[in-house]
Image 1: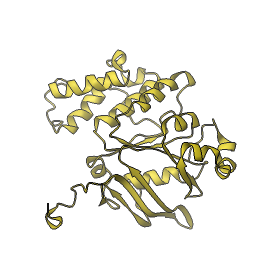
Image 2: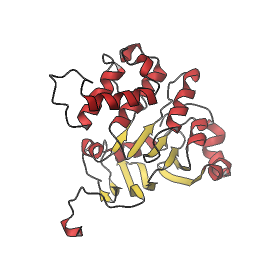
Image 3: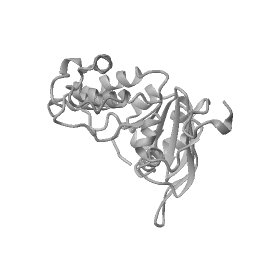
Image 4: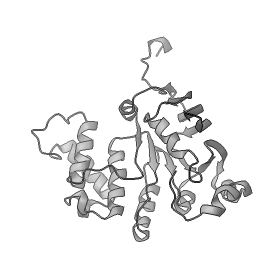
Length: 267
């Protein structure tokens, strides 16, 4: 296709699916994000870590359109999305989970997934049909319920679920959006120790073609999941490399790992 004829939203085929260039965010005199340049490759298992107040949440809010950057740019599949609305980023395949789950307590897992799957398939306007009765929606929901170990609780309301199951449902709901890029924001935050293993296993089994940026303080999850780790300190990229190099970097240990390993923090 001729470049001039290509519509603005059409993808440019590249191994880099998400990229930031010199991204900045100021809140008055505070530079919360300082010239952050980051690349997420296709199929990435990339972790973003850093001490409390490092700027990780601000960066994720910039990536998802919750905040507008002061300077710099963001590209998804080679297309500039710096000023694109949040819901349009989701449509283009960038989906986020949250530190605190964003589910509807009165719905069941089946209904929650059916609602998302229906929207994804463009049939959410058919409210005269009970949720999950469309064959395509039902097939997708059944697969997700099984994949995320929710089939035994699929008809319980979210308010009745154990917290670990709620986090699994949130990730399943994000996957129902068929993301190309999935931003996992502290998936084990607040989850009791006994329920974490199931989340670890499920996160590790996510589809290989989905590029994942994991924001996490649990180093067991980070080092078992990630192939690449970016460390943020004071709003800037402090270090980046594979798990081995980051885990043994004395500078990283001094500012983060040695101080907060195994602790649950937010920031």
